[in-house]
Image (cartoon, rainbow, N blue to C red; front, side):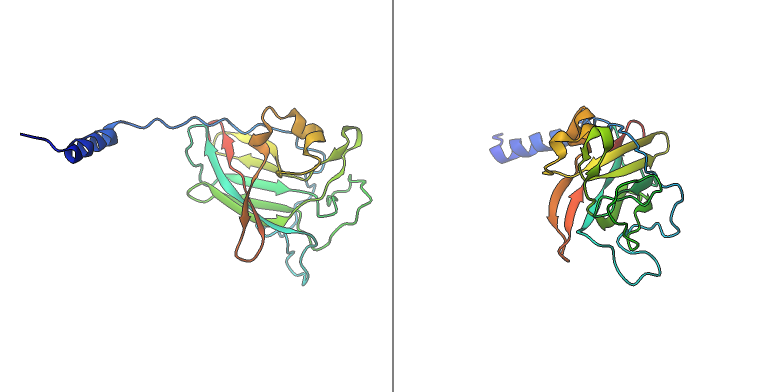
Length: 208
């Protein structure tokens, strides 16, 4: 019996579906310095919108941005219900912390800290302002970045997220210390429907 080419291709395709796929191993996100400005007192309002403070009528100053991504383990599996803390400087490069001697102004309408939980698919998202650069003492100027602590079910990670294309990235002492700066640099993914710049950054824990 003559077998058509279409039949052969269909059989090859069916056989391919039976071959188990091997998940690509992911490199765990590198730990980086917590820095001196982790909040001493967590704000009462610590939701995923850092551009508004509950009870205030004005929004935070600066460029509003959306940051999103997933928390995964090294096998590429999603980590649901991971606890994520984020804290950062305001648009002028000032932290709401008594040890920050930067003369830049505080912004009373900027939340500065958020506590998040990933969803069932390991996803997280928050709205904030792009932080400003600031003097980092002996280390020189710090490029814009966001501090992150992730508590998974097994692992804890403290690191920092950086922005692509920043002029100070090349000279930032912390970013230079990173084994692979791409691991801790978010990816710009265009603008949202309401005109906000969006950044995507996946965080990888060793076990989850």
